[in-house]
Image 1 (cartoon, rainbow, N blue to C red):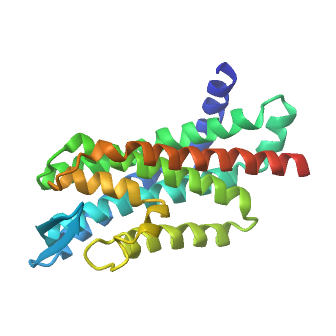
Image 2 (tube, rainbow, N blue to C red):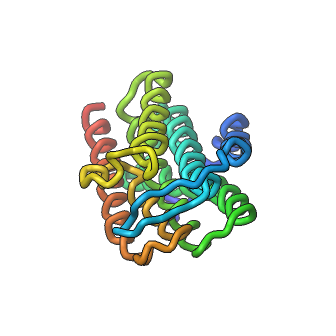
Length: 247
């Protein structure tokens, strides 16, 4: 654990030099949320969740979705950019005696901890401007969305050789999932079973169950979201082990 903590300190120093990434953590969530709030129509929307009909004002629904989108974009873009920039360092770390598992967890813990700041900013804004049934559940949902997409960003940084292509893939996946498929009001596929495989599905379920009364506790889906993240982490480790073997 001492090696991992020292590696986190080393990588963290390098991250702080990326001023554009640090600025993104602060500006992007607030920009998305403020835009969503001032552009929300005055209409009421209706959707079904957990076999419960929910009628909500548009602002509450949009802020819930935009909170997820803000966290997902910050987590995926910052983790991908950070990991891609440090790609040349990984072989040297291996030569210094660091194991693939140690390097992977150091990256994951660092970007996860950094993105908690974006989660905190988002959570504070949302809970200050709208009523949330369970603020703690909302925080948990945003944290898991951040962790899952941080892991995806790390995986894509290993699988792509072009930073531009990688960023395009990250942004496409994030927007496709959170803005289209995972929209319970406008997506007719939201309740399809295959949507459970989408990265933000379980996190959004936690968020919506925390914002609205659906008759189902948000904690009931925690085993699924933990299993999803575990699979991603294993895939990340196996990907880096495979690349290390080739190199």
